[in-house]
Length: 306
Image (cartoon, rainbow, N blue to C red; front, side):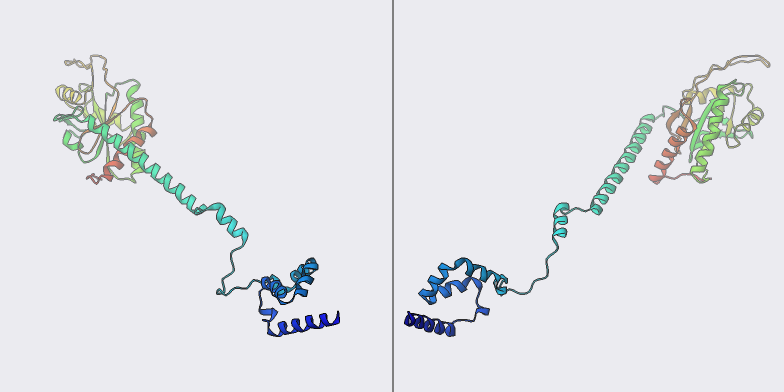
């Protein structure tokens, strides 16, 4: 028994001297090395495997990993990786930019669509060769000077037909016109690009002096026009306005006048743009007028400001 022990000890000592040090040997090679060294050690390791495994697991170098690769930077924390994986390539900044861009494009296309629709209606309102609404005429202003359709060009004109003896409708519409004038002037920062015009349908009673006193009660910016019966009839025909004023009226004779109740918006080329009726408020009418003025400016067309 003693001789066997001496032989095993000598073999183990020789293997230990010739073997690679444990500190430089990977843990997964230690047990095979010991088993290959001696049958007694192999038998011992098989009998006491649980204790041997436990002792090897408790050795500090057994938990270390051995690698010949270069040093790598520390990886991100699990929270950062989880947050990146949950959001993907998008962030709240990208989402906000996407929403703002979409909203801007939606507003732009809506405004552009409305502008094109207004332009289409205005183009349809123009006649081929001869305009459907509006045309050449000759009248007189409040100073007795000649006033023609050419004097309307260069600005947006707002033409209304009425008469000074109108009991209720004309005063209401002229009050509306006065509010529209102020709103448009305020919105255009005082630029004189809007010309309000009142044309009488009762030339026998509405002389320049009568019109002057009548219109100054509503707004000083309203241009009053009158003329002979034939001149007034011609301009009413040009604007497709109905009126029932009798031709030959004796002085002091009482009669009724019936006429169409519309405001006619004309562009700087004196082409008809749109009608403003009694259903429109000063706010809605001003909005329509300002939209057309903005469209005209956006297209770079000339517009008088004085």
